[in-house]
Image (cartoon, rainbow, N blue to C red; front, side, top):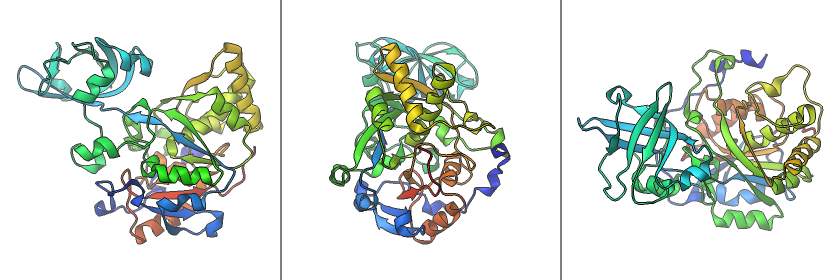
Length: 405
């Protein structure tokens, strides 16, 4: 059973000096590891700025257009104690757009640092901003905290975050957020605010690459999955069955679903977040077929014993029919899908992605795509001076087994 997969079997030596602490001068300066049928299923080195040359014409290429928000806020008590509040997702209003548009107060699910020093009462933003006077108050305690923010001046919470918050760069960079991160820990095409971590596979793209992709006859499309802090959570259990996957919200338009249902060429996913969205759509469509409406993709739903016989077209068309029946032009859902060896990909043929941490769910997703070849791929990357993790180099990986469309 997939739940019995041992995490220790998905590790590799990652020296500290191989972790890219800063981005390269230009986004597309990065290297590109290519592992595809065209490379004879052997990893080889290339340049990211020539990625279009390695992509098949007639493909559908899917990007995650989420935008990282300055979700890390620092407050100070009257006693002088510093409190860090890390915003995870909106609670009141729960809709991202509505919450960012609030002009007086809103509530978020958060992680609170130094919480033992903050028992009750309102606290003020560290360093101050008198015209905004941002304050925070704990409404509910637990593993995470519900915090209410209030402020003056009539600015939207989006603008308040921009002025008062910090971009939450990954903890493994072991440094504070710097000015360069405000621009470079954000994709060139980011639009929809909500993520607390970047979809890092997209960090390499510039307009030049997008133009080259268009010229190749590849259709570009976008989805939006807001990346949560759970993406950094290590797997602490001995087997993957003991790990609880985090849930993440995503949005796709009806026009995108129609494009996906009618696509006959390969599907190229830019990043693991786009992959999680695309693969979740298949199972939500199955829910429409079998239960009449889509709800939520649970962690182990894709692995049911009897399997799934529906084609991608059947599944996605069921989602479109559901939207039509409700008079909706976009589909909003959440997913807790986990993709590990033993998973059968339903949508994604190619994956553009960075190099991931040892013993992580993201590395397991890669192993599900390329099988045990992940070991040779990562060995090649280590031996050929590739840079690792969020600000590191990129790879283009092709799935080894055929899809049932």
